[in-house]
Length: 335
Image (cartoon, rainbow, N blue to C red; front, side, top):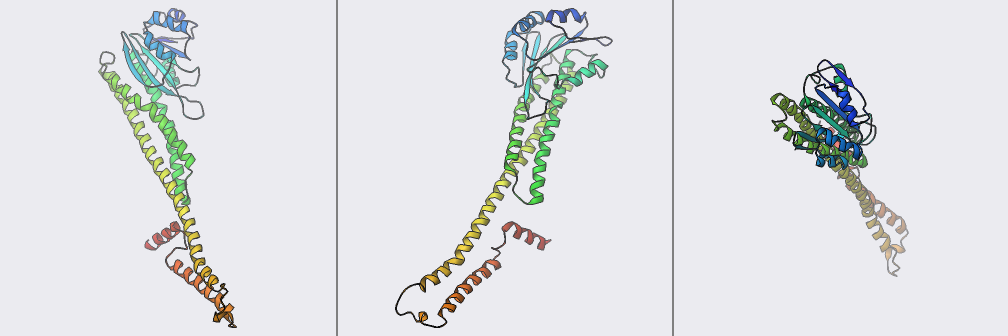
């Protein structure tokens, strides 16, 4: 709990909602944060003490982690997906924000001390910026903006992974790791799924003139711009990952084509040799070469000449070299 004004701050961890009311001591602003979803008794106390709507509390008990904005009388209900800061795959938890005339209540889905709101707490403790001087609208913006800022390192990290895969493909001229690309695309889709509804929610907040004055709407538009920038970064990385996946499939198909071409050439070389061996393997009575002294050597010479001739033809057509390396040699000649 943070109860504060421009010149005074009370920070505490109350054991009940009523205790938070007593500890507030008539200070103009209150921020009450719950680490983890409260039990039904605490939610009923919040409903009766701060006028929270029952439908909003249902969303707290059954989180969807999809951003939304809903005014309930004198309390504005905001839901945003907050990224987890713990190491591991990307995941989010629901952050429910209740904004009243002189309070902000935030309820986190998971009981985790490592969250995205520590910078807001630090600003309140140190009286940095304008949080201590402004009302609930600015505090709600600061919370939302802090959550959005924590998406940037995640998106940048995924983008760096995709760039590393691209650099490896360019450096080795080999096939990309399709499983790594698939994991990156899946994570990009998850982040985009979290951010896209947030764009609509912020658009709705910008239009709520009764809750946010002109100055606060400027801040909300700045937060909306950050979300749009994140979405643009995600779309760019998704396109690059899709291109890399297509390139990996193309390289795999090219390698399969090279193997098929090599085996076809081997079969083509042995087809005339097999024909010659088949002809002279027939047991006819009148075959002049069978009684000729040099017939055996002539047959071997004919088969070798046919094989060497076909290999020369394949070489002159560039079929004996892999197509990728042949393309590189042609590019080197042009340069």
